[in-house]
Image (cartoon, rainbow over all chains, first blue to last red; front, side, top):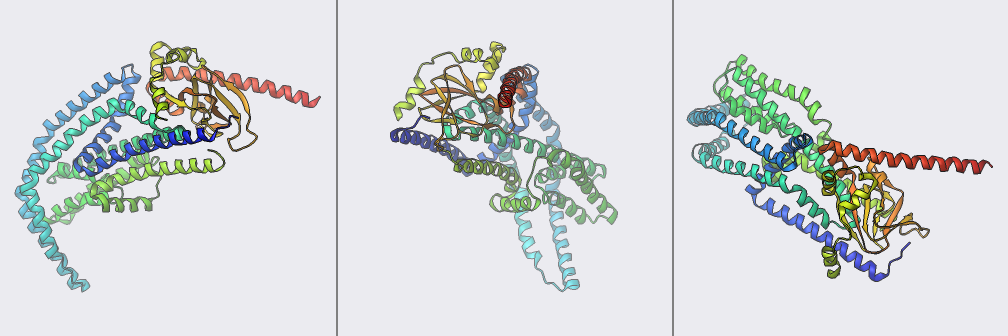
Length: 355
Length: 168
């Protein structure tokens, strides 16, 4: 047993503390900048998602014998051409539907107000409730109409620039992630090095599985919704399918939000009971496929949070960051859970008699 | 203090890392290209005299000594009965058992006897390698199981010897 002089012990402690502070400092500065610049945050988040989606593809090309960089470039080029192809094919369809929505909007907003009025009067006559939905609803509808008719082009343009930045960010993230993480690991003090490496690997693994599963699930649900709505020749099928896919990323609450626009459209258009039940049926079938087939296969074995916790987290996320917060609250909570468990284990092990 | 940090950055390599790797039984039948892959996954760590590389408890993988000397001890720093079992030098490696275990455990502690530079190779690195280059990964795994098997055999022999002396 080599015993340390006090001077040596102090030196060792100082080195470790400086390293830890530098490590944590860089991490928090990066996180802070991303959090404050909102658009950048979204681009980064998307890039993050893309990089996790691309990673297994790159690995499979590597297994086939390509070098990492060649595999990455190949995936990037084919991904970009896929996006380009989808854009050329899908853009006219979507812009047509958006145009359609813009011209139809006055009718829908009027119909919606009528609907609210009916609900109000019925609530009054049946339940004796005097609710004032209409005034509030009118205000909201007017402001939304404003957004839809005037600001939509600029919003779409902004969204496209955010979306286009993401693949390039993802490319560089993938290209240099190994170098960057190695440099980060160099800064980690020896005393916690193994724990941090283990954490990094586990969180990476979990996040990757989680993101891939959720996005595949959302894509399939969106596809089924689109196909189903097209089959019953419902208007705005592709927009509604995309919306259903996006909201499906929010557990439990998302699917309900996803179905609301379609039901409103059906009600405003005075659909018969049978047609209305067809629309609801499409969403229900999509959800049955999701809950019965996709979730058990893709998601269930990854997320180990209690349903009540999940719902609370979604509400918390929504409170802080809106829809984006609802979507990212679960993976963030998972990462925090893994981290806190490992840190707790490390600390209790230290308390048992070391350092 | 600052002095120490810079000294480690600019100190000339005592030995080419890939040569050290090639001399290690775990990596001895890998090609130069594969060695480069493995080297890319490894972590170089520096330790000052008296600093623990790891202590008895949870472990993640193995270390190869690039320079310096490492003491292997029984028990932990605050147990007074801690004693040096052996001293390892340049080219030696330790902790490889943890590579094979999901929940690895070090039964000894390792402490730097002088300024040492180690090359760490951990379970996550091995798993990454297996995912991306299964052939290389399998070759390392075969070697690892060979080393572990040999050690088990030796332990078995020692145990039977021990039982015999106990019976006598």
